[in-house]
Image (cartoon, rainbow, N blue to C red; front, side, top):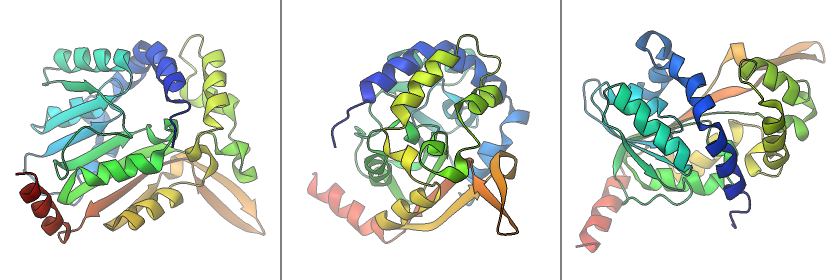
Length: 265
């Protein structure tokens, strides 16, 4: 699939690197990041030093919070300004900042390189999120885990049930303190409606893709304080807005990884 919009998205986030960092940094202190860490580290060996890939690291949220726990974290982002901000933030927090410019749809790592792959608010930006899932699963070691956080930010353009949560409400909830964001977000909305992730109910779509890749123990979490709630035929319906989805690579893939290592010698 041609990356038709990736450069437009890159320029948008390059322009938002500093303001997005200001939005994310208050979530970094230990008392504020449990929601993310509890889901990311769930069912992984306690006390083990993990090799982690932070896909679409942005200002470096996961690179900071997992790095300060002693894990080896590599953060990648397609936006050079985001990478610069992430490196600076890691340095200020005293965390080793291994940040690289890279496309989430074309990861430049060997198969079976990481114990944990994390991503936050990235896949909705991509021309080919299915390819990104395939790449994340490819670089994951047997027994390793993928956890993706994302949202149905622009599904309202296609799904009437989501129409109540439009761009104006999105701005009001998530960007009310960000100056001059309205025109920029209206612009990204005009791009997002053309992208695959804005046309599918998620995390249902994500769960299906992970299962098709062969993931074990695929789970999805819908956060009730970030759901669209309405009445339909006399019953209350909750539709996910913000969500997370996780999946493990089964131990049977160890043979395939060993064979790949052998053939590369």
